[in-house]
Length: 293
Ligand code: GLN
Image (spheres, rainbow, N blue to C red):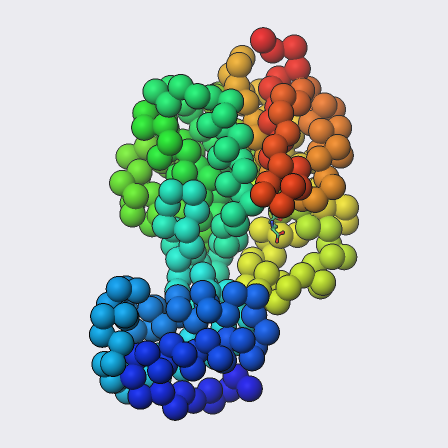
């Protein structure tokens, strides 16, 4: 149904209505929102403009763009990939094929940090391992106006996107980015280390929704045979990179919290908090060096 999708609509208003019908027919969870975001993007207009000038006729270019974008959504490409942006915490971020699409669940890590460190004046040194779009690091730098940070990623494409996002939010003076494999080769110490590593069990990858499976980079999803490979790789390096009272906050998948705590304990880290996401799933685990104050 998606190839050669054609709109009959003559005006913006009728195009929006038709888009909603098409998105419903595709069986999407949020057809009205998706239709609205795609119409705004394809027409390059804000929601108010769409309403104020709803009788305006679609130009041929607008129609072609809108048909193309609706067809992509009907084929389960996420709206964020079609419009190239995703909102995360307080930031509007660019996404690219090399970056995981930032999830609302990951905001749980930001909540964990701001709860544990209420003093926004702290000049925290932050390290984000597997930074992707830079979402976690940049959201934290926005919360702590004198903090500085380093985002590491294995993907050059992700680093390029993270730099664009740092620039876009006036944070490039406080954020640097480097290509690397977790903490390999890093020196120095950090007050805060954060990571949302890949944690999907390899055999579960085929069962993911097409939005995720076909559009998020495998590098950002594949956690190996038991989903825990990334934690095994990164945990041992953490204690040496943390200040005496430094904190590690990692995201985990559903049901992984206990296993990840065990792995962290092997590396000399002690759990200080667990925080659930809005769906009630334990999502953000916080640690300090064992024996630290
Ligand atoms: N939270 C993502 C998902 O469930 C996975 C991201 C990750 O592996 N870190 O699709």
